Length: 310
Image (cartoon, rainbow, N blue to C red; front, top):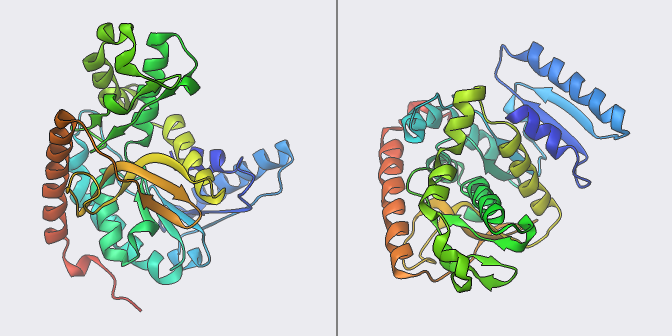
């Protein structure tokens, strides 16, 4: 995923330099990947600079740090099973990033992304608007595609979003879904929309791809590139990402989870919304699920796992 994300990001007109990061021992692969990407830039006539490093200190001066580091999810494995192992990887990285690149925005992709976005936020000490995760952005796009197919319209005519966990407890906001500017519930065909089947498809999409291909790559890569473009382009788009929720959604908060945010060059800013009763209850259940595992991870994340700040 990380290598394709770098390739997708390289198409962005706002990007002038990319630094690939990896673990010690992976220098050969990093060098080969950087050379291959440089060849692709040359073929398309781009002069983007690309480098690589295994030293996080080299991230100094970065605008955005996209964190995909971690152990990949295995077929049939729940996202939350990975939380503790990946927290031990993400926590020291987040602390180092905040030291060497205090003005950067940390963009978490590692799963379980909601839990690890909170870990990165708490450990880095950065302001909430400087740390966010991919969250339910790609899930929302998957649902958008399915709805467009059902109604036989261009995907640009569909506006929808999924909030909550990037996982089984995700919450589709049918109340906020429109087609051509018309609230979806006002369309007669809505009564025959296979909503549960669609959400099931969205929930299992990543696992299906992993089982058949070994990893997800193109979908997350393009989603990452879209969010990077939104930030660097200072676009002020409202997208659904894993971000710190205080009490802006029906008094539920103090956790990172999928929720609408206004995104620009300065960071990720909450968009307060009101939901229908059923959506509120489902969102609160999702929040409590993520809150529980996050609390356990933070309690078990001993200080020996983290480097001392310089």
